[in-house]
Amino acid sequence: MRIYNTLTKKVDDFAPLKGGIARVYSCGPTVYNNAHIGNLTAYIYSDILQRALLLGGFKVQRVMNFTDIDDKTIVAAQEKYPDLPAKESLKKLTRHFEKLFLEDMTEIGNDTKSLQFVRASESITEIQNLIQNLVKFGVAYTADDGVYFNIAEYSKKRKYGQLSHVDAPAEAKARIDNDEYDKESARDFALWKKQKTGEPAWDFEIDGQNMAGRPGWHIECSAMSVRHLGQPFDIHTGGVDHIFPHHENEIAQSTAGSQPEVYARFFFHNEHLLVDGAKMSKSKNNFYTLADIVKKSFSPLDFRMLILQSHYQTPSNFSWENLTAAHNRLKAWRNLAELRWQVSDVEDDGQQDIVKRLLESAKQALLDNLNTPETLKYIDQSIDEVSKNMAGLDFAAVNMIFDFIDKYLGIKIYDHTPDIADSIKELIVVRQVERANGNYGKSDEIREALSAQGVEIKDVSNGVIWSRK
Ligand code: AMP
Ligand code: ZN
Image 1 (cartoon, rainbow, N blue to C red):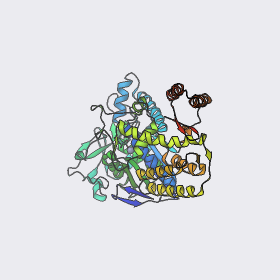
Image 2 (image 1 turned 45 degrees about the vertical axis):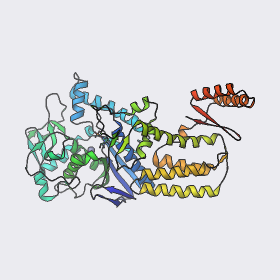
Image 3 (image 1 turned 90 degrees about the vertical axis):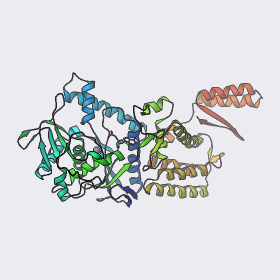
Image 4 (image 1 turned 180 degrees about the vertical axis):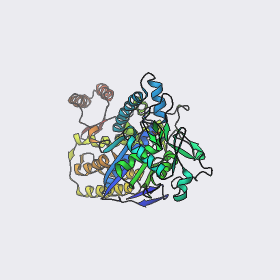
């Protein structure tokens, strides 16, 4: 299997370091509002990575965190529940959005069952131990408002900027306490922030000083990933916006002093989802959640298909037009699956061989740096192949295709294509009788009634084929 590694800036061969188990850490959501479709894009691609690793013959241990303590969650909790004690309001807000996030994850077809979710709020001891160690190693110092990472000290032994190629700041001890900042602001960053009025705080004594407060965002992921996966672990995932400062700072925090030289062996970063070619933002009114998509009668899996149609390293573009195209592709797959209720099984060894070959190509495309557009191309070809003879299907060949789609693309076809109700079947028969008797007006009326119930019909030489719209 091959994966692009942001650390080496090339597509590298991948195999897990230990025991055939790929240990993967995915930066999870900051649970202070509904995930937007850009966030969900990152999680669809990392879910595909997990599936590709399985396809490559590896086992996978994957951890995802909930960022339930950071600048944004704290502000949102204070605004939403001003009368509750700070820790309680934070918990109430973040648990609510965790639940909504998990619902979105399931709806877009991501495998949440094999993911281990961890929370920053439940890793405070590990976070504090790591900070204590960084102070001991001489790469962290206390200030009036918290504990900071000392980039100049770190740089004496290790290179800061391995991932983002941002240079270590020339001016030592210029500090920043925001969790998020841009490349121009590379400087000593906050590991721990002393409590400000109204903020939640966890006890912490360091160098004899009372530092009750809360962790910075970057240290949370360093502590949680290594706690659950060990170090070095295999793959760290996130969107490209995480390269700097988040992942760069994680590397620095986890490789200082006597810690191992390598934090994560591979960094997997997805490009951003654009909306109508532009960055998504609330001010531009092009900011969507899954609920907005569902409101327009599209399914969350149509959205998944749209994302899979782009390679994770190219910015994908969301537009209603693109979503319609994705919907139509998924509809064609489902319509084929619906034929299983309507035609007989015709064994065709030659067809099975062709489908096997095409699925092998689909597999190789996925293993080659997750080339999902290419994978979809081979799936479409295999669907065309088995659809050649609509009077009968080779069910074994069809099952092979849908098994692949279900396991490796996360789109369950059979679950969404049950047989139609008997009342609809009866209506189809009544229409056929009316049509045979030349009552075309009546037969058209029935066609429209069926359409209103979401079923389309097509007259073929030996009867009628139905499909869902
Ligand atoms: P956050 O909750 O802000 O940390 O974001 C969750 C994940 O979504 C991170 O991996 C981000 O890099 C990713 N992300 C944010 N915006 C987009 C976008 N427009 N397209 C793809 N991924 C994104
Ligand atoms: Zn993270």
